[in-house]
Length: 262
Image (cartoon, rainbow, N blue to C red; front, side, top):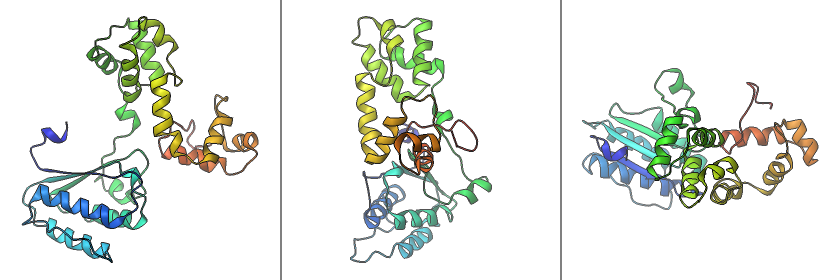
């Protein structure tokens, strides 16, 4: 909906799940930019047995310098890109951006890109969890849009239980629409609710290796957990690094202190 309201062209690339092919990813990026900017500006690239990615990106940067009007490049689901070469060439593009190209990265995880120079230079805008979290009024608007009426107390409880997580509010609204007692449903709403549990299983837990799922299971009874405590419960080692990686992946694990030890 944001892209549809833009006056300037938008090149949109959604990364395929578990993408490991650098050539396929970059051919899609170049194709999207050619569609947005025109073939006279960006030349399309054909598949080749050996893909010289750095050379291709350098040529692309030179072509994008010819842009006379702004173009937005959106790379959605960047966390699915599991290829160091493709990411290195993306970092190369980001650190040499032409004047009329803006890149927007949508990712569920902290991107494995060296963005610190852009951040220090004030050339990076970041929208994170707290920015995306729904306010109480936004939660009210979404619930009402589903034709659901809740008391102020019920609405506040739903907002607190979901912590303003938009997908959680939406999943609750889906269940509420068919529930004869919305107020009671909200008071009992949790991650074990069918639609929420299904989402968490598919989008979060099934993506984790067995040792991580075992750690999450064995530490789930605790109010808070540290690496050494998790190691004691699992009988293993390295839990602190796993917990920090889960937080970086936005996998519903949140650090409680600046040192990220709890």
